[in-house]
Length: 281
View: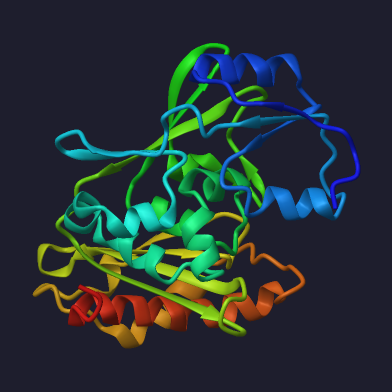
């Protein structure tokens, strides 16, 4: 139960929402899908006097801009699953959304923007967004600016958003690359211990895997070194290759960093194997 009195705001423009947030720094929280914020408020882990609801801002659409997709920050996982343009131009994103941690309730309510801003290392989206080469469009006192997803995740539960800024859209380039996504969970529905998103065209000499939850931020690892001159992948080399590049493993209540580092290579290898075999296409 939320025991403190709250002022509720539902602005109808991004600029108005940003103004409210700037006026109430330290007192306001931003409400997207609410799947993380509301439980934390019930547990008194977040103190706030104002709630700024983003549902009136028109940020729940997916648009094909020719060469890239503009995905509003309020787009839910189900919106992703139902989008034909996502299925065609960003199938890796659709694959990750189909198995999102938390199941049907999270797919219905959870938003891509909320997941990105919460920046939980163990959530599905951070590594996927980095793997896709996504760009985060934000709005604040200086207007709009764009941040590469690789630079957006600064630390565990810390993003590159400045005080008073809002994430308004995620820009995802069209991709015809092969892909794979795997994760290791202790149980169905639990936060992953490690995630891995593989993207590339081995025949063209390009292959990378982005590992999530092994460190506090996603780690993109170029795997061109495990390709031979004919574009074939020696998957047996991937485990050690990936482990050697996890140099600052992340520990939380689910798993210590040493374990995460140990299993990261195997999870990455499975994602790459899916990419090679086309089992997730």
